[in-house]
Length: 424
Length: 156
Image 1 (cartoon, rainbow over the protein chains, first blue to last red):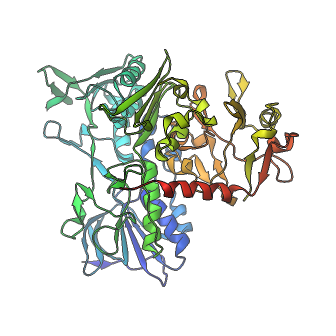
Image 2 (image 1 turned 45 degrees about the vertical axis):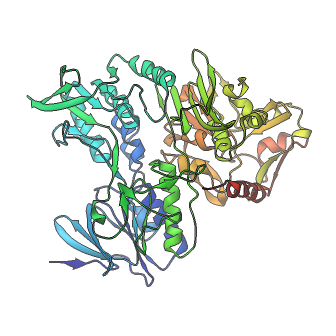
Image 3 (image 1 turned 30 degrees about the vertical axis):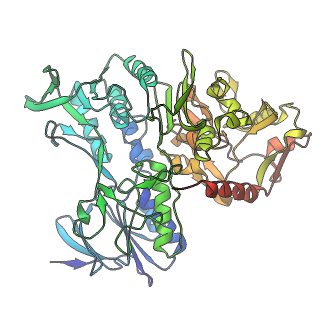
């Protein structure tokens, strides 16, 4: 039997704003919606069993570096204080744009949730390939709380893990797993670790630091071409024909946007949801924010896929303002990320991967520090640092404002950065 | 909302502000035996300059904080729950003022949370007898300059 959930626990007279997804884009949107519309209904539909938390922290939770209370930061009270109607363990399956309802399933029951405005903040999921298909018993990705709990359990029993992909999630998962004494082999197709963030120099520094722990082995320019069940675990076959046993496997070769439930709605999707500067999709009153959609490169103005936390938080707020009829635009951001492994910090900002005749590099190198700035026409386009990342935001500001390098190095704040004292 | 303003011409790098910060603030944490103040005054090519949190309105550090350690507090202050910092240094990556202290030995980042001082005057400001540090309603002014800069960036 179909049940209509209209203003279920919380009754308000205004519009109904429905948010699908429950991570940072969703909660920042909900918070803004509540501030702007005290009399409207706000409904959040989340497919997980727990309220919102920071997904970036799950690998820290896996490695027992933070407690469960720290991870699960948003309690149900957070929602009730803001009069947000929270539906947990509820999966959106489709949208009827004519009747303006979201079709969802909760505990095997179908529910229809009507909306006046709809925000898609469903994020992304790990990619699996036929050579390593998802298997709830031993081949998973690392994306949510459930995954980290699963890996924690396996880490107690298993002695050996293979991680496919040496990107951000792969390395951080390895970092967490070895704290349980699990031997981890990381296999990466690219010649560098943290592909989007590093060059060969930075990559080798990160790799050396991680491999100081004897439990971590990193093999570059290799991949897993097949996996098969063997006893309680799996046997992975590598590109060169070698085989290796692992108790479990973590896939971290990338993510794809969760757009399935938008099929046949008319929302334009080119792998990710197309939005405009106000987070509007191509269908009226449907908005998108976070890892599910594109965003602007703030310098070039190009549409890029910049699936990072700060972008999601900002997009959520902009979407909420527009859902409330307040015209706001999101100017975008640049690709960036920062992480540490065994007290080696890595920060990368901007288009680190740029190469070409028009790209000039300014480099500072010592035994413990590596900093690299790329310039195009004398203007910084990227900054990458390991060992000493102090003041990275100062250089980020110069990239965003397109301050010529010669001008930047004369500014007071530039003195913080060893690379700014290097001659070109 | 008041904010810090630094007048380099009046500063002679006496560092009384740094000493005052360390003396009163528990979160001017220890680093290898010594203390690191939140306010740092350095010699630049064109005179002294200050590194200190300006509690800016759009506070990019709060958006970037994956541990939800940095938060927008009452009165527009940017406050920090240090126990929640996991040391990713994302805040350092986005702070245009270089105001985040990245303390590697503690694997944590720290910043001024403006919790010190009497009669609503921060300790560092009270300690400055050169007139180089002012705590006044200048934040709106600073932010309008920043917003203007963002608008000036050409888009394709």
